[in-house]
Length: 295
Image (cartoon, rainbow, N blue to C red; front, side, top):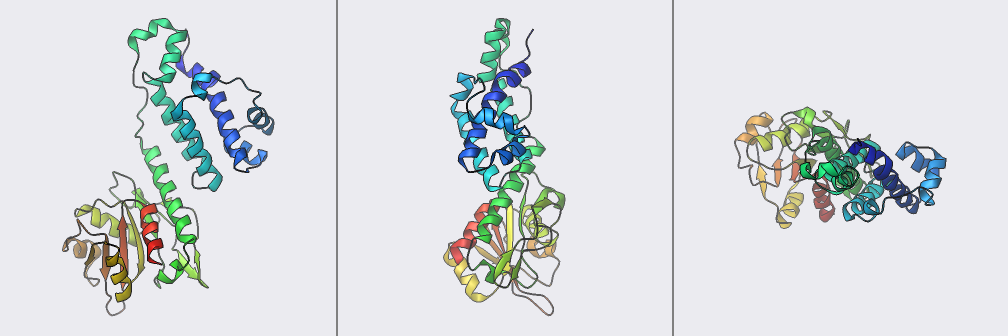
């Protein structure tokens, strides 16, 4: 009796780890950094990177495995992806390969009687942890774009900015990832105070959730300063701009306008209320890219 988990441990993981160790070293990470990311010893990294570990050819040559190794290596090397996020993606791929696919076929070779029962479902690949990690990763990539966009600091309002993205089935602020605190302009430099977290954005998250509640399919939002020139620039990009009443509570104000097709929501201010622009987008990366097109 041989379990598919034994195949994962004995054949898939050594092959996958060796491939990932190679790619990370190619991206100039040190042996110590690779060991820390993979949760293994430096001597193990050395063995993986130098081909001293037996590798399964079927796993080694699978295009999906190779693509995921490259994707994870890029994300881990830049910091856009955490080891937890990488672990989730590998687990999802393993579960997919166990369902009537590569690992299932290897399993059937070891246990021929399984052939008539292949294709069973082991895990749900659309779990909450995966969705959360993908959302956080998207916000990280968006923040990187903003930090590297010359001129973005000049678009930050006095109250600061926040870049947020929600999970696909978000129903509250705890399902929205953003920057703890706010993004500020510090002497002309965009300053991000910390890593994205869930439940840390009150205002920008509430605007996004209100927009979604009233017909928008946006999953991300970014607040910017408002002025007529910026409004005209956004419109020139082909973005649909919609004004709402800044003196009314956010939920009611957004409910009263045609938000379903809006790419930009804005309010022009009032006594004691700073005029603000809210850029809506399918994801945080797209929101940041649209800002990059402005400056």
